[in-house]
Length: 334
Image 1 (tube, rainbow, N blue to C red):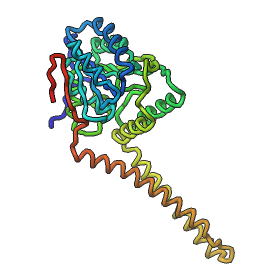
Image 2: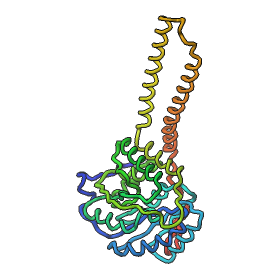
Image 3: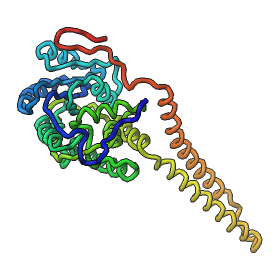
Image 4: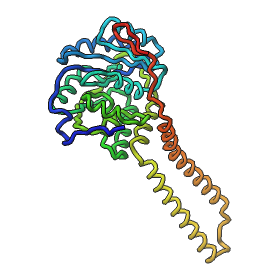
């Protein structure tokens, strides 16, 4: 497989010109029935003002079970600018976005969430950055109207990832972005199976610029991004774009070994100097065994995480299985 073609001069853009020919907006949907009507209304107000000759909205239902599929199908029948992509089960947010990127046909492709926490009105500012010469314009969350623990968790994760990853992944940026077709094609050429979209977007390079915006609360419904899903996303980011966990294991292994050797030397010298005062050591031995056993299990878990991910990559499974692509004409691409 050929390597992605990067721009010869960073900062000059993948293309010298920018044409507002066609825009695709990829929106992953998982149990968002309550917010879809509001989403359609906001998009209907924003999209005509963006100045594109044509646009499409690719709604990717990630195994929704609350009737979202029916709402999407009804919208597609009523509006030829909408397309429904229905996955065979719930594969996760990143897999849904990836499936949408593969379906999108525009020369400019945007990614946003369905819950309206990525405001459609910000699309105009992102597209203006592309017109100014950028290849990627991504949203940077200036303020979040979310719970304190979520804000703290997100802030900690992004800073940890930025510190650990050799790839410069912008702080406080999610998948909300607009990209030129060349960037999406470069991302789609990458063969890996675990897709961390914002990491891949940063890895391929090109001229990338951030646009700050305030992230509001959900407009309706409840979030499907549970703590478990957030942890899984953090794992994908850290283990896919960093070898830091293994290096920490190596460092701690050296420290533990050095400490054990030092303690052994200390007790050996003590035994020969004053064997009558030498402690029996049952408690010391027991605690040491438990401590070292725990450290070994932790190390094996970290190394095992990389082994499992390597196994997943070797299987070559697709990110998701598309059950059906539904377009306005009624044609169903199985």
